[in-house]
Length: 339
Image (cartoon, rainbow, N blue to C red):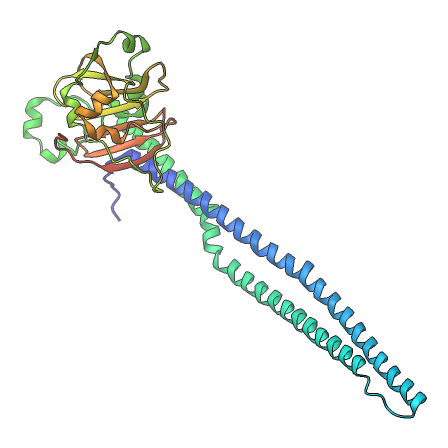
């Protein structure tokens, strides 16, 4: 087995770790619910139905015995008074009804006992069948998450190491595969670093308001955030058309674009749009004007406060983070102009 791995995104490892935790929790809750339902059904059959039908059998047996005695007494009395055996129609009907009800109660008691035995057997088979899943929830998944934590820590420590300067003449003669590795995400692309690049409130107040956003915003290719992974609409408050968005004025079209939403208020949507390149100032634009110039941005504007969308044109990916910098999704995005 190879001792080397080609890792393109630490964020995907974090997403895998979060997915394992979600699966483990969901599976554990589902197994607990199933076990509870089985125990509740068995308790109902044992404590309620079996006791009920046992009592009904006893009552019906006593009534059948009383009906037999009543029939015999009727026959003996009629023979003593008239010297003939009476038909005793009413007593015979009462006896037949009591015996029928006794048979029904005995059948239902037998069926209840059969159900109890069947469920207990199925419960035993079920417990044997889920042992592998229980083992995964209790041991395998926690161990895998621990290994992922170590891998992520090691990779982040490795990324944080600055590479040594390489002389130009050496680089020309060195194999391209050694000195030109596949591009890795910049250290500045971490959620913490990007959130730190959001201007202070004073900048929002001092930036001029324009009717047309910077041209580079039209080339931003955001992910399709119309629905989440469960098919539900985004739960954030969509900004009003007159709400303001702060946009950085940058040189050209940056390879890395990030959109961060703060709490906002007082006419501000809370959204800031910036790029990983030299910033020459900031402008404020209304949401309606921004959407008119770059309609594709409307996909992400309804994300809740605290959201961060990182669009990396070099990696052709878009990553969405929540307020706690957890990865919600990472999907490929087109790299061409969005006009």
